[in-house]
Image 1: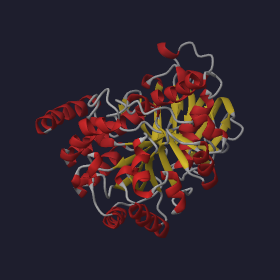
Image 2: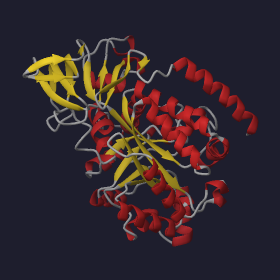
Image 3: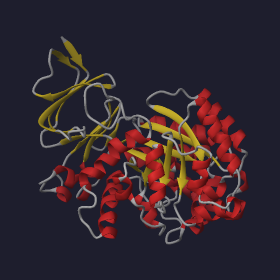
Image 4: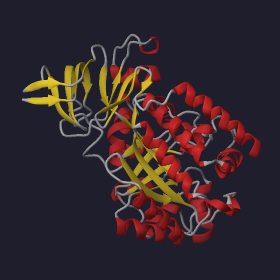
Length: 450
């Protein structure tokens, strides 16, 4: 006979498996951090259940995976509005990033991760580039871990970029940056709940030698990596000026395009870029909100999917999104493609959910553990409650989730078998209103210095 830690009953279970099975009035049993059983009726040999949840009227989905965010920007919502990328950077992200304290980074991490959990995210990928003080990374990691979310910490580097406004304190040799990555890996325990990556920040702040140095480290130590790529036309300008070629050509030449790479934004991908991404197994993190907010453009997502490229979703930093809301990101991901292609069928609600779940799992190297609800996988999932004004009546649960939902529809978020958010309460014990009060006080201190 078996004892389960949590049994969820009477749910409409969207497995997101290869058959896209939906189990009506389904039951899912969790033991430890793992899905132990899924089906209809009573789990076999069930002797005892520590906790039960009646999910009647609700739907169970795999948790969403936010594959790109800049956590410190959670304190910068609304700054630099209505400017293009470089101007926006120099009005918001860069000047504030230079002065933020470790405590402010920790508060920003709690804010971003709690908002993510509240919108159905069970995993988040932090793209960290304010490296002027090692304590900032430590504080960010501690803030992330305090919320109970599954985390990837991507400690990136810049080894040039002054001509574009990159603060000198952010710039460092790539070999020193890799030593800092190694030091973080030594200090913080890595497992399925927390991993450390690296990467170049963006093409106009990275030299060819920087790419090569980083790649050598990642290949020798089996470290995954990510970078901003072809977000705007500026991305390629430096590459052509110094190396006489397109950035994707340069990356392919040095062996940078691999299945360990997560390319972010990719607004200006060409058909040939897409072909090479598919051939090398590169994943894309699609961030629709900031690409619209900064006027950067709309990436060729349907074309990438059709060519076999793995596509995941990201919110990006709140300075260029104004939220860390994955539900909002999913809706935008669907609608902008329908509009630009003038074809409502070019991307479906189901495809967008798969990008947020299975696509994200593959992008972070956990496709065998996350993204699908089935026995043996990690117990990361959300309960979606359609019984709210915005999503009522519910004719199609997947359509309701993508087109007619908000944070209030997320009833419960479960990470690694633990309930971390339920009905407005965070298991971490961090009170939402108190956190906001503390952040407002810190923001006033920052404004005096900028």
